[in-house]
Every structure is written in C-alpha cells, then in structure tokens.
Length: 407
Ligand SMILES: Cc1cc2nc3c(=O)[nH]c(=O)nc-3n(C[C@H](O)[C@H](O)[C@H](O)COP(=O)(O)OP(=O)(O)OC[C@H]3O[C@@H](n4cnc5c(N)ncnc54)[C@H](O)[C@@H]3O)c2cc1C
Image (tube, rainbow, N blue to C red):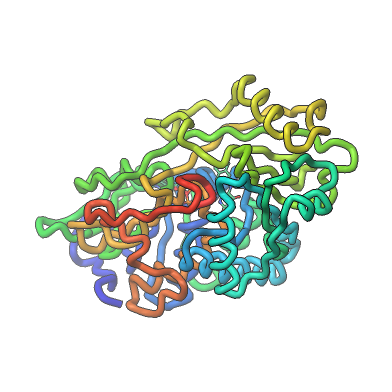
C-alpha cells in the first residue's frame, strides 16, 4: 500500500496507531474494514461512536435490486447480491436473505427510461422480464393498472435484515483481522502543515496515529470533513416511512414494488408489516444535526401514503396503519455516492452520500475502497464515476428517472 504504514513514533502523544482508521460502523464502514483486513493492509481499526447500524443502516429497507441507470451500479449491485447470499449461507442463523423478486411499474412518460434500463441490465447478465398492462394485471390481479402502464420484473431481487447483516459483516471483518470498536467516537481529524493526515483524536482523548483515514460517517461525514476545510456536497435529509398491516391475502408473496407513477416503493418486512416510502426525496426535510432529528412521522404523510398505495392496490384503503418512522439519508446533488480521495488532503478518503440506495452496494464498495488504498483491482466499482471532485469538474451523473432512491 502507498502510505498507510503505521508510524507511532510520529507523535510522542500517540497512544495507539493503525495503518488504516475507518470512521463509522454502518454498512459501509464495516464492509470497508472487512475488505481492507482481507487485503492484509496491516492494522485496520474501525471506530463507531454509538453501535453498529446507529445511523442510516439500522433502519434501511435493505432491498437488493439490480435496476439502475448505470452499468457500474448494476455490476456492483450484482456482485454484492452474490456476496450477501453467500454471507447468509455461511452465517449461523443467517442474515434474513429473502429472494422476494421486485416489480417496477411506470406510466407512459417513463416507458423509454424503463426499457433503456432493462436493456442495460440484460447486457450485464441480469434476468429481467418486461410487462405490459395485460401482463401486469396477470402478475398482480389485485392491483389497478392503466392501459398504457408498463413494467418489469426482476426475479433475483431480494432483501436482507439490517441488524443481523451488520453483525455478520462485523464478525467477518474481525475474523479477517480488523479491530472494531463500538462506543468510541472520532472527535478530531489531525493533519500536518502539508495537509497530510497524521491521525485522529477520539472523544475520550486518545490519539490514534495513522496515515490513512477513511470517513464512512453517513450523515455525520460532512461535519467531520469540514474540520480539514472540505466542503463536499453531502446533505442529511429525513425521509419518512409508513407501516401498514398487509390486507388479507397480501404480503405473503413478498414481492417488492417500485411504483414510479405513484412515487412509492413498498415491501413486506420480516415483522409482517408492509413498509411504504417515497421514491423521490426532494421534498424531505433537511437535517442540520443528525444527532437530533424527529424520528416520528406526520399524520399527513401516513394519509398520503395510504391514498397513493390504495390507488394502486385498493385493499390498502382500510388496512391497519402501525404509524411510521423517520430515518436519515445522506444525499449528494446527483444521488450518487462520493467515494475516493478528499481533494487537497492526502491520506483522507470519503465513502458517503449513498442517497438512500447504498445497502445493496456495500460489498462492492468494500472491495473497491480497499483497492483504492492498496492500488489493487477495484472490481466493478469505477472510481471516476464516484470521484468526490466530480461536481467541481462539472461531471455530475444523471439518472433515468431524475434524482431518487432508484439512483
Ligand atoms: C429508511 C431507509 C431505507 C433504505 N432502503 C434501502 C434499500 O432498500 N436498499 C438499499 O440499498 N439502501 C437503502 N437505504 C440506504 C442505505 O441504508 C444507506 O445508503 C446505507 O445504510 C449508508 O450506510 P453508511 O455506512 O454510509 O452510513 P450510516 O449507516 O449512517 O453509518 C455511519 C456511521 O458512522 C457513525 N459515526 C458518525 N460519526 C462518527 C464519529 N465521529 N466517530 C465514530 N463513528 C461515527 C454513526 O454512528 C453511524 O453508525 C435506506 C436507507 C434508509 C434510511
């Protein structure tokens, strides 16, 4: 590896040292730590200020689909799907991997985008079936579809359950040799006069010397990076989720839905509830301090979700609502993550801004980030696609359906 050999002697005050320090024990930090340890880069230490999954990852829908507008994302989702399936098989008790299949339904306005994405998926080896209105009605006779509706079905789409998955990834990272801490937060990033990372100071005052620091802090990343003068465009927002009891006869088949016409997605949760959320997030509240946000949802949101869902699947008009929960997304201007070196500070990497669709990409992100550090093969992750400085260079990505969790 280029610069990460630990140098504990660089400061007399150092009480710990690591070749690589990872900040954050969400799905990204844990996958990154696992891949780095597996790549034998030396001492890899992860600090999580609360507990694994305390941020976005713990409330994730954790849907693993391969429908995207970009080849690198499809290939990353595909490789990650296989890794999650493997992890489920090798974890005692599993990680809740459920092969549910996922249906996409669109109005005429999105017909061309859907067809383009399906063609891209097929080129990447993804099994996907297109559905016209008659096929949609046969596929889900309990739903209403206009005569010009179109859709697609991805049989391999699946979901996992976040907390057992986070625990399993953490166990793999430890088995590969990484040291993971919960309840230890990073308070300060340290750099020298030449703007090279030299270490971090923890909230308990401990100094940890390192030359390579990877910030996987989800919604907290922007504030951490601001300490070294970075102003990368990472914004925390507060999406709401509703939970309904599936009407009799629904939910058991477990198919996941993305309804582009209604702007909704829904899926059966392991608890038996149907989780419903918005695909677009441009109306969601911006959150200034991720440590303090309202975790509740409004009655207006629940009523609006019910009415849009019931317009598609009428039986939801009187199903029992179990309220909802608000969560956090970290979004970027083009709905794609920032992965790579932070401009103007050497030894500092950012892995954040997954804009509501990162869980499924975690394994490929881990492999790709380890390669950025070691100079190895990043697999399907194309570093240029995620380059943190792309906005400054006028090279933002674009998505077929605008900016939403569909990426
Ligand atoms: C409601 C919801 C539904 C979603 N549904 C899906 C889906 O179906 N499919 C999908 O692929 N994705 C989905 N996502 C998105 C996905 O969950 C996120 O993209 C992903 O979890 C982001 O992980 P992360 O590790 O980047 O961030 P986080 O999970 O937020 O992790 C960041 C961690 O860093 C820690 N931290 C912060 N600052 C410090 C510090 N100074 N020191 C130490 N630790 C620190 C935090 O405590 C936190 O645990 C969903 C997200 C939400 C919220």
